[in-house]
Image 1 (cartoon, rainbow, N blue to C red):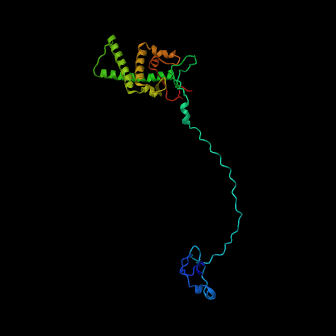
Image 2: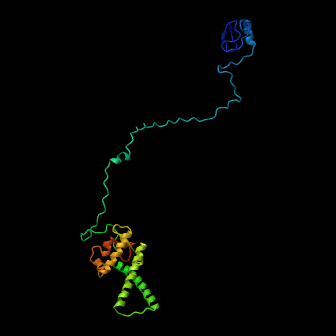
Amino acid sequence: MSTCPHCHAWNLQDEQRCVRCGRRLESSALTDGALATDLAALAPSRPTLSPFGPQQGLLFEPAPGAKIIPFQKAVPPARPPAPRRQAPAARKADYLPLLDYLPPAPPGPRTLPTKVEAVIYCDAPVATLTHRVLAAALDGAMILIGFALFLSAFFYLGGEVAWNAWSLVGFTVAFASIALFYGLLWLLAGADTPGKQWTRLRLINFDGYSPEPAQRALLFLGVCLSFSAASLGLLWALVDEETLAWHDHISKTFLTFREIDTNFYRR
């Protein structure tokens, strides 16, 4: 038997290489007996090989230990147990279809102080009679200016007037035609007359919206009817619960203020 000088494993006498590390074995004469012991004492000591193979040694001397003041290790406080996750609540969309929503109630008529149901559904106030008379006067002034221009052109072109019943009827028809043309012009334009604009009035329907063209046409016909009935349609506003004239009831429109706080009306 011989011993491997590298890994000190036992091998048979006729083995040439170590069965453990695979290195070549020396002769048994040098590895066994007293001579081998003397040679082993004279031979330089070999570093013991690591079972993991050769390793690189340290290139520099290790630095001296740093002066570190030890502190007591902080122990984190114990965390409370995490709450159990509950099942997610049902989404709003899951139960909304189950609800039975009622349709909104249609707006009903208001009740006047005299316990009479109002025909106006919105909360906009009706313009005062003074305010509306002033707007009508300004529009009438515009019609008179147009009639004056008509007479000026008539006399300038050499027209002569014989003051009799026929001439009176002719001038009345001319004045009415100018007034109708003035109202029809603003009807086709779909806008308020200059008198309403100067007095800061606007025309709306009973629901509080701008009137439709059909309602403006009914208003124009209602005004013509009010004047044709000896102005009784206009005087009706003096006794009406909401100070509305015939043409207002016919077209379901009325004049209100562009601004609530005016010199004619304040809440």
